[in-house]
Length: 269
Ligand code: ADP
Image (cartoon, rainbow, N blue to C red; front, top):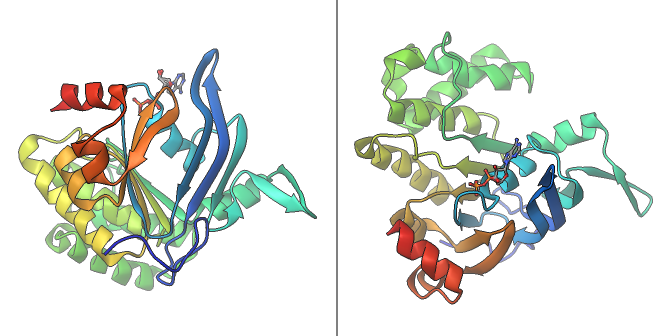
């Protein structure tokens, strides 16, 4: 299975996955320009892995897509809708918060550190946003939450709190929580980096399942090169807030053209 052949970048596939289109995206923290005039198209249902040295802007581009960092200039579209802008006639104007919230509701993000609510059970963590943000009835949220826990192999842990779960289990709950809002785009920021090595596999298996379902576009920052090679449609090499090399995993990881990609891959091997 690969990138949807029918849908165009920026639109939505038959299964409901949304494309992402970025143009001239720039973001600085003070004088530190972290994203530079970045152009990026991700097709609906595509699985894109972002690699690159520390500080190259990988997390920032995901956080900007999740609106956790606001971009300084440029545009981001999700499923053909502008995230940070609204169209007035044919003019783009900065979006109101309500518009940003609405477009963002199509996006889910999973973090390196799971950010689960410690006082709630696994199931309650998953039910929270569908009820509070999307107004889903409690019983429907519970049923959907249990189905998701089953999907990530944790139905038995529904009533446990995060403190009772291993790191890998916590991350699987965090992924299920993100899926509960039925995102059209999922962002994964080094979701296995904080885990003990023996727990990485169970989380990667959950990501494989999600990829196979094809209901969501996936953008992943990861250092798991074997995993990237196996499941990515495309690998992007970031450096200095720009994409310096992009292509099929076998090309970018197996036969990199850019010296910086070669140096990076040499260092992580
Ligand atoms: P990567 O994920 O590739 O390691 P990041 O996107 O996390 O890179 O960071 C890129 C640069 O932006 C780094 O120099 C980092 O220190 C800086 N940075 C990230 N977030 C902030 C912030 N909230 N405030 C100031 N600087 C930041």
